[in-house]
Length: 270
Length: 86
Image (cartoon, rainbow over all chains, first blue to last red; front, side, top):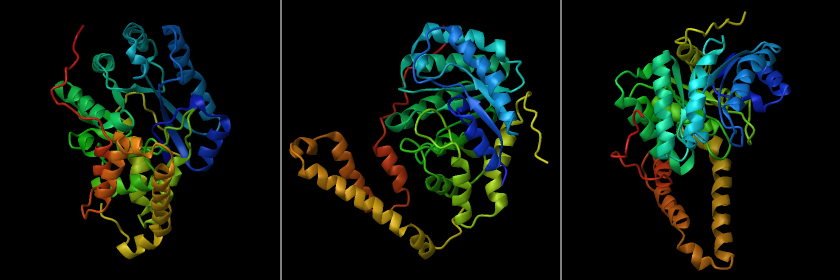
């Protein structure tokens, strides 16, 4: 089955991973800007990173027939540094005309601090000003519920925000309804230890349905599995779901969300 | 989207996996109790939360996973100070 991985950090993966994903049926992916494992020292560090996301990764993906899209921002961990964050936010528009950019992301909260909330809000302003889609990271573990509620509060406080243009990521059992009940798109991340397993993700689908929801691997430099979406597909098959029902979650839904971006020019596989 | 499989089918599929995971929890609790300073850990909020999860697992409610997640979550205050324009 063809699938799309809507959240994966390919800068941290080797070309063999692109190969394996292509063999498993991956035809497109989107790569949000994230934390490199250390705090970058200057806006130029981000400028170089954005070049990698908009120039080099699309080429590596294309070499195995995968279409690569991306999202730009300064991530929540580094958002604690307000002055650097503002420099990055001011620089992001330099890249907004690159053909593989889908919007602003993954913005969000990490430890739910005042500075993180301020920078989230300023990213939201940028997205509104430039009419971009928004991809949101929600915190991990004990911080997730509070952080997701704070994020939804900020989004709902602003009447200019269109929920159908916002994707809230890393939802789990206790946050999926918080996102869905207000009309936002949401995604579950299949990631060992700190996030969701394929079987729990299918449980969540059984509880809330398969509208406006997708799954991703968030494969990065940590212990993660870039072919986690096929594991989810396998779990759905094991439980007896039709190919059409599975395809809606792993292909149709990401396409429907991404097609709202003016730069998304997806080529259907032959 | 209700589950397609019947409860007996699901039990056949998950029994060994559930058994293994419950044994891991039981063995971890035993390990804590066998170790030195076990009394100190008994007062640790994390240990107390684990005890509460065991109580949640024995209820008949259908959202046990959600309840466990909330038990392990920080408190949310809806009156938190919102950010704004500089």
